[in-house]
Amino acid sequence: MRIECEKDTLIKYVGNGKVILLNPNNKHWIRLSETLFEKKMLNSAHFFNELNEKYQMFEAPNKFNGVDAIYYSVTGKCNLRCKFCALNSGPDVDTDNDLTIKQIAKIASEIKKLNVRKVVITGGEPLVRHDIREIVRLFAESIGKDKITLQTNGILLDNQILSEIAPFINNLEISIENIFSNNVLLNNMRKIFHASLKYNIKLSFSFVVDRDSMPYFIDALKLSQEFNAHFQYRIVSAIGRAIENSLSLSEKEILSIYITFLDYVINTPDKSEPFMESLLGNLYPQRSCGAYGRILAIHPDGETFMCANFFDKEFALGNVKFDELNVILNRLACKLHDEKIKKVFLVDHNSKCQKCNYIYFCNGQCVAESIQNEEDYNCDLKKKLLEFSMFYIDNKKSKLDNIYNMREYLIALSKEV
Figure 1: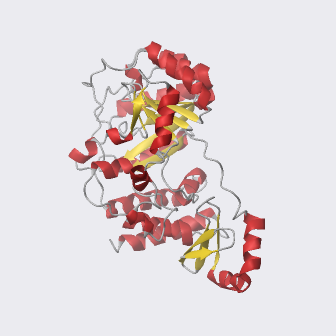
Figure 2 (figure 1 turned 120 degrees about the vertical axis):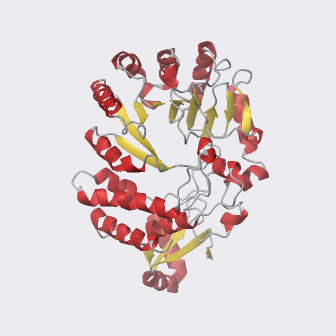
Figure 3 (figure 1 turned 90 degrees about the vertical axis):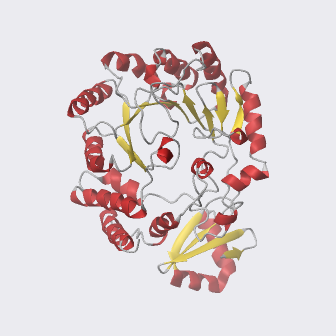
């Protein structure tokens, strides 16, 4: 429901006896009880003034600053062939067209002008490139090591490589879903994690949840606690190799993962504060994902796209081998004004999302996933999870109490699906 005000239009969301008011232009929002809302609306003019004075509900939106993150896949080659890989990487991927170190140096120099928040060096597996030390050095010297993240499966890491890259990276993000089924590998990786900390490298662990990795989810949580590593997980997406391997999980399987996570947190509350924050999260209303103008993805051959998971020409921006960075950014700016692009990315331009009761708090389906899958996306579970975050979290209760409530909510939900 929309509420017309003198200064702007607010969107009203209602659930579980609560009301959320959102200004979709500046993304400011508040939550209050339905009873209090009805009382406040008896003098709506005074209420709207209060909203602006206390919560800046009607202030002008922040200026769009353009690209703030660059994802550079230095190679499509990988020492593994994960069944869920979005980029179809593997040992036999051709590297003849990968950018040379001279071409990479030019990109690193140009990126300095952008004042980006981060540059993520990824692959394939970036460590299969023997010049990876030189690559991270170029970017670190251009924009500062604090903005550099290196993504890797970690298997090719050793003490020498760590000592060489440590001066040039801030964060080492290691995918760990493949290490638990082999004790020798797990023990070797533990040594790598210890060495990383010795070199003052921040550790992040990523974990893709599919049917093969589900049994090791708790092990991954424990490992992240052991090394004080930031932990991020995602449910396997129906893109890339995951489609041909039919890896998509059912709603019941996804709920079982969340419940398993909650059970672990409940049983280890003294060690699980970061996990509680991750599960309860914060609501960040958005019109789109970051691929709408905030990300620049560079593929191994220099082709640039709005997202690292895009290969379609519709989202192509040019090639850094031949095009100056400012030309590529101008093309990106033109894309953002293209009505076809808006209908794909922006929830308030997408016919399905426009009708959704959770619009903006949900920023829509992953565009890469929608492109690669012809079947209609079922977002019922996503809506139910959002409903809890929007209307059932009680800020007057402790995080642990909210975790208990979330568990009860999801158990009840799992009986319905």
